[in-house]
Length: 66
Image 1: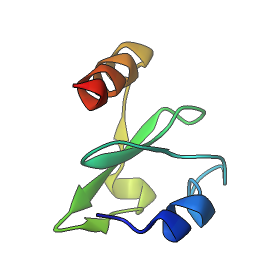
Image 2: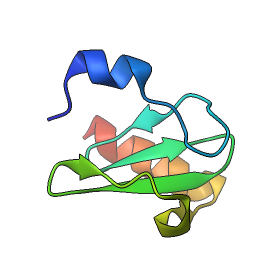
Image 3: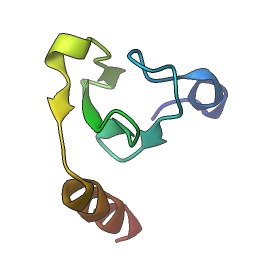
């Protein structure tokens, strides 16, 4: 679990925009990048990020609601 205070200051490493925190990743809706969380540690290396689509973001958001 990522502390609430940390969530407030984290930003996308590429555009410095807001990140969407999901159960096992962070998503930048501006850059369309998904940053995985591995062993409770976010991997914010841009080279490791996964390019995703709006549909994939919607699916991830829907999974979070469940």
